[in-house]
Structure formats: structure tokens, C-alpha cells
Length: 220
Image (cartoon, rainbow, N blue to C red; front, side, top):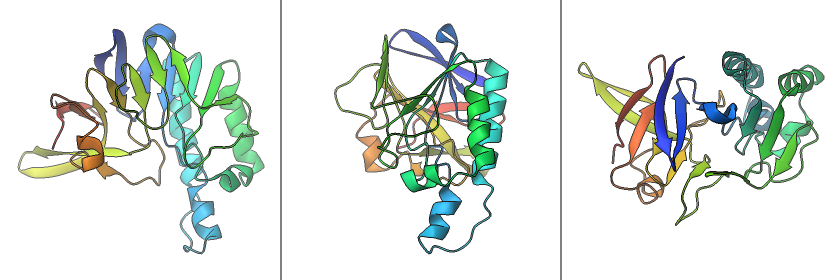
């Protein structure tokens, strides 16, 4: 499997090259910031037309990770939809696709700032989920331990063979891991941004996503 293992609060986790988090002992797959329906929301708000393939591409990649891991539990860590109207506007084909991914497993929608209300798409919709020794929530909190969150869409830069590469990245230290955005049309926040720099400990690391996940000291 294309993964980089690391420990958090005594739990053995793996950062997958796709941007998903895999907790093998719990058969649990976690993804953050899918932002399904983003192209629909952009068009609805007058932002112009973008190719409306983001939801299908994101669900294709998520389906591949579920098939790879055969996860019994899937946690979507907030901002799964670009807004609640985008969730309601999903075509029937994509709603059925989500139902097929949910079949036979526990599925949890964590509330995000983009999708705080209930979602009528199966699964459970809650503010946060503790599964000892970890807690899954959308936005990181101060003074915490064993926290798994998203929200910031972290990215990190790596110099390789004389060129600079920027990729979505996991950020982790002894207290928390912040997941990269999984959605196709999502942007990113540089790891040296003050919002991330002040959250993460000085010894924090970044795991860059891609064909071979690469772990480096978190760029500041």
C-alpha cells in the first residue's frame, strides 16, 4: 500500500498517498474536505462555469481507497459538501454512488463550517467523534491530544533535484494530525502560514501526498 506510517497518542496510523488517513487496527478510513458539489456552488453564485466533474472524480478516488483498504468505518471529516445547497443539488447518480460506497460499513459525516446542518445522504451526522485514544473533528482545538482534524487544507513544499515541489500534506506532531483536503477542486494553505505554524509543535512533520508519500520536517 502507498502509505507512510506514524504514531499519534499510541495509535498506529498511515498517511496514504491519496490524502486519506488509514487506521488499520480499527479498519477505519478518514478523509477531509471533500467539498463535493463545488462546481455547482461556483456556478450558482455567479463565479462562472468550471468543468462539473469534481464530485465524480473525488468519489472515484474515495471508492478506490475504500476498495484498497476494505474499511469497515469511513469518517468524512467535515466540509464534505461545498455548502448544504450543493449537497441537496447532487444528481441522483451521485447520490446513489454515495449510497453504494456506504453499503455494509459505518459512515460518519463530521460537521464542517461549510456543512453544519444535517445531511440526508445516509450515515451519521455529528459534531465530533471520539474513538479512544483519538478524537475526530473538523477544526483543530488548542490544548488537545490525539486529535484528527482537517479544515486548513495544508500544503508543503519540498526541494527535489534542484526544483521545488508543492503538494497537499498531512501535518502531525505528538498532539494532532491535520489532514490535507481530499476534494478535487480544493486549494491549500502553506504550512508556514501563521494559522498552522502556531498550531503545530516545533518538531512537527509534513507528509507530502503523491505516488510516494514523503515525510519531511514541517516547512516553517
